Length: 449
Image 1 (cartoon, rainbow, N blue to C red):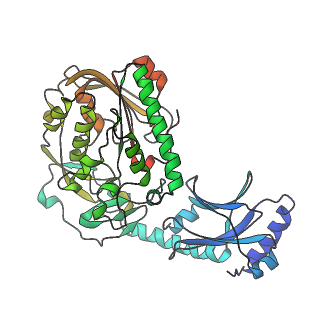
Image 2 (spheres, rainbow, N blue to C red):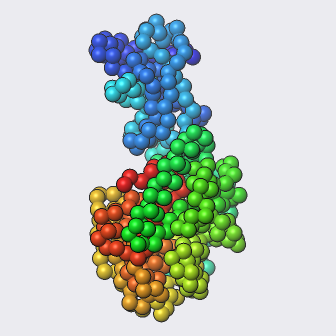
Image 3 (tube, one colour):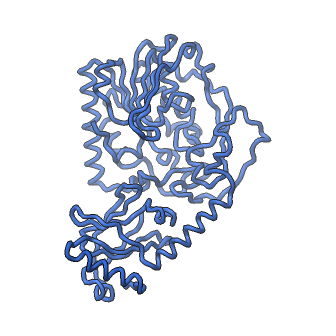
């Protein structure tokens, strides 16, 4: 690889080299080929180079090779080149949401863009901004209502877009179904996780969940655990990217826990839905009300078998048009889909006295750390339950939330919007049931105790 540096950049290199050589501070330059989704450049005094997105290291590469022209100017410089895990926008680099960082021990330096790439990136970012401004309104049509109850046929008109249309970190699949493929969890990379990483992470997950089960048993508490599969894993036949099934990590953990009385594997349930796509919103990462109902039936039947029938008998009586969390990535158009939902009238007589008694927030995350408490003297079960989960349990306001079903089923229900178990609270409250729930794409991060 040969590297041409404009005069201004060369002067900066020489000055930087003279300033940092004594301290061996790593430094260097990079450029991005947006068409090929590759990064290349060079680093001096660096053990390796990290690709960092929103503060999270996604991958590393060790600089290697030679470049005579480059090393004549900077003898310590070593070239590098890496394939990016996905296509990034120029705006992501301009805003420094995506960075390349040279690392040597505890010393870290953000690499600078080459002069040539700086110009190209600025022009491309300007064009991206102009394209966003071309359509009026907020991202994902936020100028329009999130939900429309009882929509009329004349309220909406279908629009055809090409399959595979990319709106990083989302992509459009077949039949109007949107998929998350990127994001801070680098979802597609998880389907290509190395065998070594799978073994290490699955062992940690199995140990954690069995430790939870043992501690709940010691406290006389019923424990139930599930991991919801990704939409991409279930509706893979509609996806424009190659996916053959669940991530290797979820597959490994599920196999290791098969037979555990507290483990609820909901993937077969979602795979068997007819039609399968009815289990998820088209414009959202989450389960649809129909998919949530199926999951709730299996999950809460693990607590009391008779609750399966209670859940399955709830009708979906209301038509609703809604925008999902993936639609915001597709410009400013308000993409709606029409779904059937249940409301409190459908869950009688168990909804008669269901009410939220308290809510609060721990920390300053957007949702993580929120908590909700419910009481229901007309619940289907006299038991108390506490869930540690994600947005799939949610605030319990709609039938797409597992929490909505739980608040009608249990006389007391507490929802804690985080993956970690709060054993201090569990021991203080002593619920009859503790439910653990997370999502497939969150699995590379083991919950801390």
